[in-house]
Image (tube, rainbow, N blue to C red; front, side, top):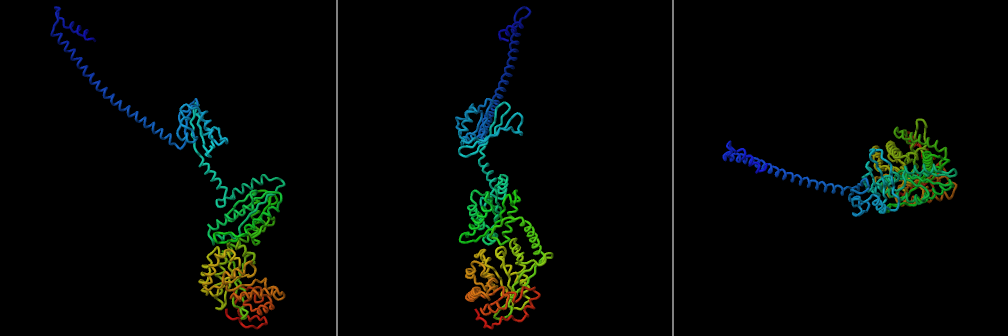
Length: 632
């Protein structure tokens, strides 16, 4: 109400009955009105103060929210631009609304290229300009894992710098889309490397067994009716001894050299693979079989016969090969591989260093061989062996001076198994170490029952040098039997030295220093017997029986025998002639002043229980009286 109206109202209320204005009444009304309005003014002031305070608080909250929003915005930008993935968002009109730095980096785009509102078409053109010219791989299939309201598309970009970018685009129901982009170059390379390792040998880089089988499968399936396919299975002979003597690292280096030589021989037109530690395989196609594969095998053998070197050490290798030809020997991968393996086993059983073509009868023979191997393993466990002893006869003293231990296998079903049937097998499958250890122990034990001057000769295989601690085995056998080392004579063939001369010589010297005698067996049958005589001071050389057969009637054979005996005498080595079977041969050797003889003319090998009887027999007389040689 306006002040004037209010005042007139108060004046009206202050009029008395006589029409005059009661001044006191009017004053009271004015004062009352003032007091009412004064109270309202106080309330208003309080309300204003409250509003001012709330406004201050509200302004503080708004400021805090603004700061928080700015912080969230900055955090979003930090996260967005530090994502390892590229990100871009397009609206329903296919215009850019959001992108990050990683997206720009992946595709080499500029800041100007990515202004808000840029069309997806323009950006796609610029991204394609940075590809290497090859079309990218695309997949437009809908993902079954996505909701019905969106679709998922994939694309790969092969960039001009070699990088592979994978894009995953989620198309939303309103037509907008969100794209995520990743550099998968390293992942793809890692996956390809894993795939490569799964199909290749890491040492040589050659295809492995898995990849080779795939190649054989594919080649057989594509074979033309008039086409032949040869599969060659190669195995390095006694390669395990190189690992045992020179170490696995040295063996690996030599395997790499082997792979290079075989690769050069096989050529790029054939498939070469490494199947195992010392096994390789070659797949050869063509019409001119078996001539082509025969020529290939010959070339490989020649290449591998050349010396290998590891530092200053020289290593000699040989190879055995089994060959199967499709379709004659099989039209399936498993059969062809098996038959090549069977042929390889026959090549090794026939003396190694050769190739064998598969023949149908080989499989039956292999089954027999496997059965023999199983029986041989059982024989080692059950000690089904026994030793027979053949006398060594001293011609000057005309008495038995020792015995050579010769193993015999008494099979409970097969009966007596000849050594030539099971010793090569034992060497091939590694049982010769256990058998050789048993022979050493039994021979030393038996020798303790003989007179003190009678020695015992034991043959030692090359594998015992490479696959066991021969020095320890000999020491333990002597200790267990309490036999003097001077009574033990170890016989080795030239093959022992050929395996690895530098590793074998220290072992021979250690044995000789203990007083053990070392003999070279089968002298004259190898290629380098004379050179080996100069490399180690043998106590004895044993002349192979092949030199004895014709010495009575053949002047050349007699002259060779005479020369070898003189050679042994000049080198200070005793000479033993094996295979003496007649009195005429004995008499001739007496004239040549040979030291010892061994053969059926003295006695065939006999069981241990007959040794005392052999020692009691009278001397053999060749009809020649001679003076004993001066001591060397």
